[in-house]
Image (cartoon, rainbow, N blue to C red; front, side, top):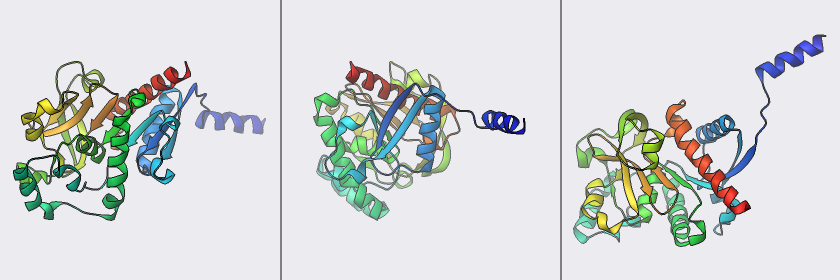
Length: 270
């Protein structure tokens, strides 16, 4: 009887879950605890077992077919050299004048070439057009850089507003048929940890260069891009950190990635 009661108490406190599906999500670098916990938590809600793999540990030759989705997480500043060659001389000179505001680091030096080349390879392969990609903070910035879009070197220096570190911003989705609008459809709060971001003014001035791209939400009166979407692939970049949210943004953003990964997996299984 005592053993039965103990087993019953254990099952009530630690219920078992039957996962109906499994997806493998590649992380462009080693995703931290918050990413792993948040993604697996959302997976459990959906009845999906989520396996996460550090792509950077696999060397230079990636087997894209091993993954149902890919995440480019936040982290170090991106070296401006990865986008300066794509912009005009005057912006090159201006950006270099602010070079002292770039936080160069060993992490950035390690990640920049890996992630830039991964994205170049991904976008060059038509067979990957249904492989979902999520970029978070630095990851969204790297998505933009891979398309030749420059960044603000430092928000405070260039926009005269506080750098967005450890605070919540009110994010306003753009109207239209977009991923962000489908997920939220109303202003929401996003947790921020960044001092750089997509150079919105440059993107708007040269928007004809990127007919497949759209900034789909903003904060700070339209000065900071909060999401970037691709019309030709299931690719979403968000400037805020859903992994640090306790449910609302986390469930929607990671839920989108898991749902998209399941769709790709089912297509490949047909």
